[in-house]
Image (cartoon, rainbow, N blue to C red):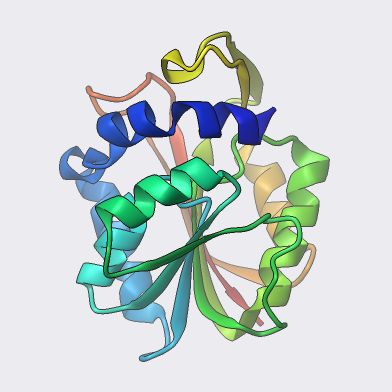
Amino acid sequence: MVKEAYDASAGTYAEKNFHELDYKPLDRQLLDRFSAMVSPGGLVCDIGCGPGEIADYLHKKNLNVVGIDISDTMIQEAQRLNPDIGFHTGDMFSLEVPDNHFSGLCSFYAIVNFQYEDIRKIFHEYHRVLKKVGILLVSFHTGEQSISVDDFYESGKPLVFYYFDEQKILELLRGPGFEILEALVRIPYREEYPSKRAYVLCVKK
């Protein structure tokens, strides 16, 4: 259901969200911090990249970045909007890359359509593909509830979003061996859906 919803909504989603960082100064600061912490020259992945707005920002910070998303149509939008960045379809539960492949992994709202047990598996995969001392930046909605959308971005497809308890996410990150460096929660910007957002910056030890 997740893939189908994003496939069907890709064009509208890209139109409405590609420039969302313009009104999110804290997100930009966190991405700047992430960029400064990644090993120089290392390969960075924007996982669950959507139309590639995060990859675009990181690319403009002179990072060597690629984007991966489960939706073929969303990848097409990302490639159209970011011709200088490489994008390809992939499953965050089982990424087709070797162990210790990426120096940095940026997961902006990539986990929001999954429940805790799925996220446990995703974080183990993130840990596998990151190099030692690789940096991970994760963001998600907080509140521990689910929100069902019947018509996701006028696609006619339903989609469920999950909000998480911050402490549970921190424990799931520690499970495979991530060390939490920083974590914060912010209130929503005026332009956003009215939910609090959490950001966790961690390192593979």
